[in-house]
Length: 178
Image (tube, rainbow, N blue to C red; front, side, top):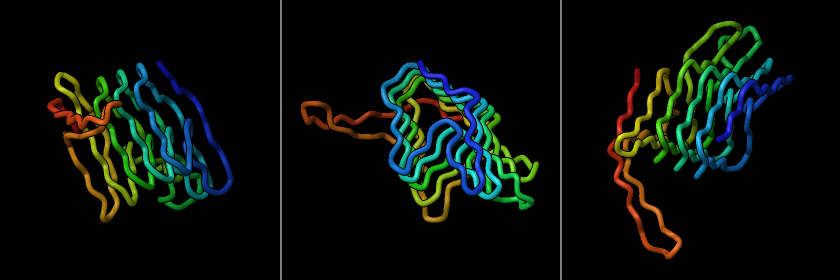
């Protein structure tokens, strides 16, 4: 299990990812339980991803339970914009699939004290969210998917196993927006 809790990235100018930030692809694959809680990216101009920021893509797959709770992207300037993705920001694709239960709750973008419950902000890519049978993905806040991007729920996915055989995973779990 991994727990990322109370990490903070603070700066003048753009600040990215309270716990994890990369210009490349971020992959969280094949782990036990993963928890991101109370992480924060704070800036006086733009802040991206209270827990995770990627300039490419993010893959969260084949893990135990995954939880994003109480993460913040904070802009301290007087404008009411500049904070993007309370939990996750990516300028690429976001794939959340084949995990135990997944929860997004109480993640927020904070602009000059103005709170917006928005956990996921995807610009320039696609979002694919799926849950295996008897598992669930629960999202208790809004998601922003940029112009020209796509959003797929319970999308089946195909990959190649170690012997080069094509395997298709059929997703049948619950995806809840509450």
